[in-house]
Length: 87
Image (cartoon, rainbow, N blue to C red; front, side, top):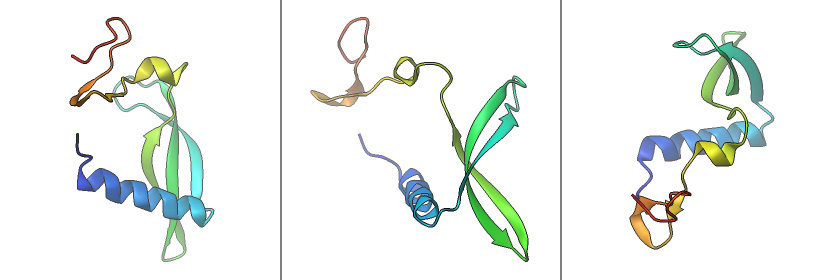
């Protein structure tokens, strides 16, 4: 499974921001549900103003319950905890 170029580019930007000490954790509201989200942002400057670029939010609860990892035996599949197999 190939990671798209926009995701790789955003990840590199995130790594640079972290290396430069330009990351922030902001409390925001989910635009759909209105629930609080804790958002990882890169911090930049534009004409003396701070600019916050959101990259994603921290998972609520156990992050292992929120994501299915890639299946090492099938490059197109994902591991399902209930079946132990890719879909």
